[in-house]
Length: 551
Image 1 (spheres, one colour):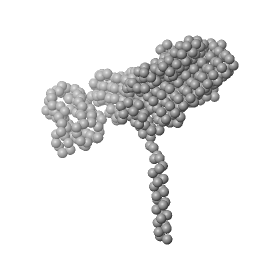
Image 2 (tube, rainbow, N blue to C red):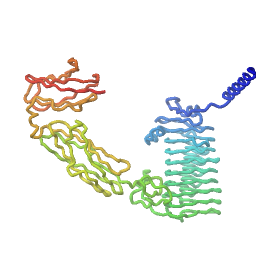
Image 3 (cartoon, one colour):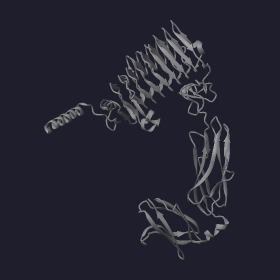
Image 4 (cartoon, rainbow, N blue to C red):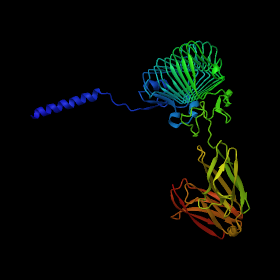
């Protein structure tokens, strides 16, 4: 009986062990740094497993990357910081010897390209910048520019059932020679583009300076397509084969020749978009059809500076608040705009000057002004204006003269706030003027205030006639504090620091000083934390003060 039980237990444990050995170990996503872990991006990609992240540090990398049969995230430090400066400073340069990035068979939703500049690629076939083949990655916050393909897709090619989601990208100044799609060429695929700018791309022979869509189903939402050129037709979009295209909240402007051209059973739907030339600039041939939906306009979008690539909307733009009303509102809570870049209609606060300084003076009171302005397009509500003492923290000689009530400022209006400096004694003071408002980007604006008085109000004149250390600020202090003292006459003065055992640890001053106020700084960085004694000695007087150093 015992033998039978032991045999069963042995069989169970053996089966469990074999099962554990044969089952794949769960993988933990890793972050691989370039060049920290590997010198090249390609080497890091080769060593990565599914769901890993290849984090590329700033630099220019002359490589032609191939990502095959794996779903990984490849991006700049924008991935971890959301600092858009890393997009421009992290460059993958194809060196005109091939496609910059090729992704094959990456259909998992974890595949992504994020925060990169992809440039200088060349292919004598398809795709100078990015080639997606049976791959559906997320491509976001990328700049794809200055690439060329002899056949199709100067900037990007999507083929063989690739369904990428492309957001917040700039596809600019790419070129193709004979196959169309200066910016993007799609074949039997269905990319979704949102908040993208497609500009200054060129197709030499076939159509589609911006996009060529062949036998696929593509979607454009809140995109700006401008300044593209096709020698054939369809400066912005060219559709051939059995393709479907859905476009909403977009701007098609200044593209040649014609804006949108369709052939061969193509069907497009355009709504709530600004199309230069209107419906007449949308050409449909050979059983193709264009559904001209609601909300379309034909008005100059009033870009800030399209010639130099600034496609932000001026306040006069007819595209503001003209998007599909069932779509989510813009970040400023207004109705969504047409185009890739919404016009911020929030109030925008400006406080000037950026620093307030009351220069050394001999008066009892001084006053200056600070300007609070609304640079936005809706009412700015200033909820509060306060001044807090910084140094010394328990003395605040600054106050707002004309009240601290709520303010409501309309567009381009300014309010002057009067700030008064009335020091209780001679010395140096620091404060902070804080303005709280409904500006969503700057809920609180702070301005530093400095004030220095060389004299004191009449009731405090006795200080100038005394041998006295009248200010130690801050106290307690961390490493650095300021000392201010007065002398009733010229005298030989020593200012020394002692620890609690009476041992001298520092001499700050040992000199003959003139009558009046003086100051110095005590740097306790090299001292241990604790209580210290400050002793100032003259020919006839001695003053002792306590200081607390904290670390």
